[in-house]
Image (cartoon, rainbow, N blue to C red; front, top):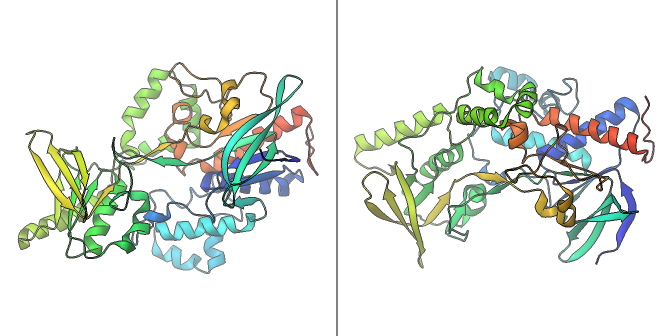
Length: 438
């Protein structure tokens, strides 16, 4: 077993994507504002900051306004805003002249890297969390030991009073499929494509934004290859980004969702699923249709739309994959010989309890089996657990559709920081210069 670092942190963050990056910024800005320090460290299994690098496709844009960056909705004067980034990069006027609220995905990723750069002293990259173990004092869990694997099999431990779990989303593949050199998830597209030589056909499964973007990218990148888009819908569904519908992502909507009866939450989820799930920007839908129609006119259809269809079988061959697709109406099946099958079949939030081990036994669950999450994003626990365990993501069932999106990241980070500060004050546990007044 690893020897614990006997230093006790006020907070350990698992993961350092946009959510915990926003948290680190909120912590720093609070310290600058109050002079009170919360001792925090973040553990990230990637060896450098990265956010969906495999889908940073040229020409793709964010689906959320740049004003919903890491800080602006919490602190419009922050030096970590997207506008501050533009100023630092010397592109503010150029961006204004661009007349858009939606930067390219590449530019927004550069913004995130820029924002993460000042926190290298607080982030341990290449640090994979493998376990969280409770530390008991007089029958109660006073601390949590976070066990980390670094440099191969070397283990070390960080001890903390509070834990913030932000492990992101897990890619989902159709039942029975596993990834290999011929079957990919869309998240790894750009990492895999350099190894493809003279492809004849791609099959893309999925009906959401990523599926449409992958289909469009492959069609444009490989002018001699056929691209088959397979999905159960009759056609791609446009995303509802209308102003009133977008209010479901407002910070005030989190309170409404949290307080709503379960049947109301389910109704809201159903009503507004078209704002986020399995939907595509209308401009991209129209562009794909334009290309599809032009190829019909020209008599050479490289872009094939296999709608109202599902993938029923995949077998591997020496030179590719054989995908069997069934038409949902007629039941007819077609076999597609392809070089690569790309599954743009979405993501699901990771279960925070999988890391918690014995600590997870002290966490409360709802009748559905999901974790009970308090309004401040803390997992409800037995009184025997004196530590705070907070979750970023995996809270849609309690906090609404904004749970895994950027829209509420800035506000949520500030709320968690204040909740941790109150717990530290009430518990009388201060480190360094930390001391709350009032």
